[in-house]
Amino acid sequence: MLPDRFNKLKKILTQRQPDLTVLLEDVEKPHNLAAIARTCDAVGIDEVHAVTSIKGLRLSQMAAGGIRRWVALNKYKTTEAAFKNLKSQGMQLVVTHLSDNTIDYKEIDYTKPTAIIAGSEYVGVSDYAIEHADHCIAIPMLGMVQSLNVSVAMSVILYEALEQRKKAGMYDVSRMDTDKYKKKLFEWTQPRVSNQCKERKENYPELDDDGQILITETKV
Image 1 (spheres, one colour):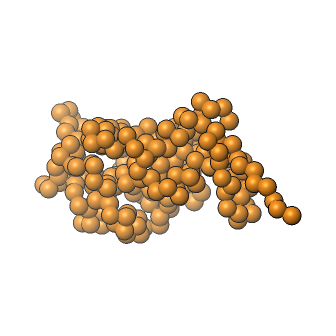
Image 2 (image 1 turned 90 degrees about the vertical axis):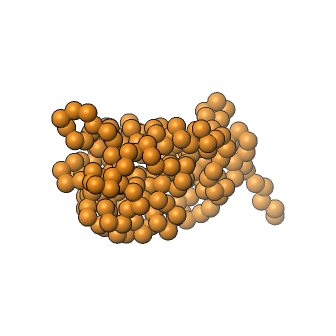
């Protein structure tokens, strides 16, 4: 791997935001999830979540733009299971939903650990999501339609989160757990070897400062 490529991957990984994510509930259109994952990568998110009954759902649609390698997809059978996992990570759960208690999306403090939840195009978020959310938010609409396409709406919200976090200096230093950082860096820079290690259930080798695998001498 060329040094410029290795340094770019390190910089991108350093800017990842481990405590910012999205959850798409009841996925009906995989291309929307793929488009959202692409935006997530752009703002420094490395994991997205989906409640879905679609078997074999993957971030491989054209809308993903090859994002599957850079963003992980966590799937759940129920919203309850997804919320439980996100809450265990200390996330505030912010649901996109229009109601009497809804606030403007810019009023949320996105520098806090945050999961942004959106529903399907047809029915929106579930009653369970609304009941167990910390906040309901909406993007102001001045026309006849009440909402944007889910992938467009998520992009608007995520870039608000980006701006808040940039102002707070949250992209200036690595915020990812050291072990996870090393693991991700190896997988990004050595995909073939990392797949072999997974198949053999072996630990990843160490990398040198140039992104090359360190060869350790075996003592006889």
